[in-house]
Length: 457
Image 1 (cartoon, rainbow, N blue to C red):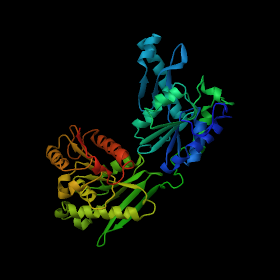
Image 2: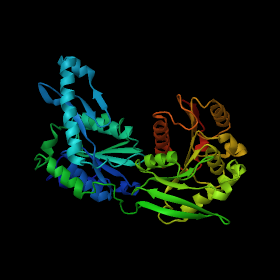
Image 3: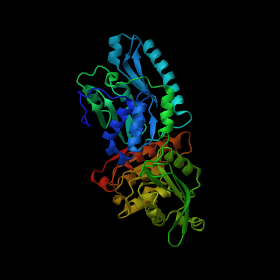
Image 4: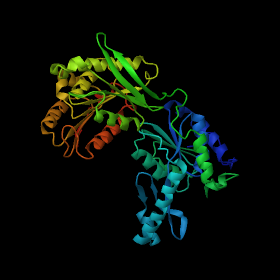
C-alpha cells in the first residue's frame, strides 16, 4: 500500500535513515500495540532503527539468508532463517538444472554465514521474546521477497501474534504475493517500473556489521519498555484474603504482554521446582508470572483443604483482584495455569461471574472438580494430560465434554501425572506458551462463548 503521499515523481529517499523516519510516521498507529521491531540485516537495520524510535519499541534483528543460484547469486532459489526455517523454490531449481549437491553446498555456506551474523549482531544476548506480540519486520526494500517471506515465517514460528512487514519501496507484485504471509504489508512507494531497491535511494552504501551492532546497541537492543508499556517486575508480594495472608512472588520481563497466575496442586507450593521451571519458560517468552501459596502452612496440613476447590478458587480470584489493583500490573491480561487440583481451582475461578481471565491452561489437572462451574467458563481452555496418566485422562475427557468455550485436550505421549519423563515438561511448556500467545492478548473476555470448538491431540 502507499500511505505517505509519496509517489514515483519523488523518485528517491536521501538514505536509509530518511526512509526509516518516513516509514515510522506511516506506522505510528501501531505504537499503542507495543510492538517489537525486527530488522533484516544488514540494510534493514538503519531503517528499522528509525522505525523503532518512532514507535518507542524495542529493536532486534531477524536473521535470514537468501540461497542464490551459483551462477547468478542475486537470484534466490530459496532462503533459510533462524529456527531451522527453510524455503525452497523447487521449480526454479529444476529450471536452473541444479543438482542436490549444488543446492546442499549453497545452503551449507549460507548456514555458516547465518550463524556468524547471529553471533556478530547479538553476541551473548538472547533474542527479544516475540510470543504474543505484534511484530514489525523492516527491510530497506523488497525485490523478490524471498528473504522477507522467510523472516515472516520465522517470526510466526516463534509465536508472534500479528506480523506487519514494512519497507520503504517494493514492486506491487511482490507486495501482493506477501499479503498471504504477513498480516499487513506496508510499502511507501509501489513503483510500476521497479528494477532494483538501490535505485530508489540517493545513498545506498553498504551497511557494515559494525554499524548494525552499534545501532542495535544504541537503539534498544534489549526489550526496554516503550512509553506506556509495563515495566519489569521482580518482587515478593503479600496477598491479603481477609482472614489469611498469602505470600507470593511477582516477576515479569519489561513490556510483558500478560501475567499468568499459578494455581498449584496437592502437596505443592510456590517453591515447586516444576512450577518455577514453567514460570521461567513463560517469562522468557514475554509473560509475567505470579507464584503464590493458595493455602497457609496450617491449612495445607489438612488434606481436606487440598480438595476444597471452592476455597482454592476463591483464593485465586482474590489474587486476580490484587493484580488488578496493583498499578504496575493492572493493565496486563491475566491467564491461569493450574496443576492437579489447581487445575480444578483455575476453572472454578474462570467460571465465576464477571471474571475477565483471558485463557486457562491445566497441567495434569482435575477439571472435573470444578463441577457445575465448567459450562460457565468463557475463556479458551487447554487441558494437558500425560498419555500414561490414564485415570486423569478419562476425567479430563469427561470434563471437556461439559465445556462450552473453545477448548483443546492435548495428550503428551508416555508422560505420567507429574511429567517427569525426559522432555515431557518441556513439551508442556511449549503447549502452554503457544496457548497463551494465541489467546491471552488476542482475545477479549466473553468472546469465547460465541463459537465453541473442541479438539483432542
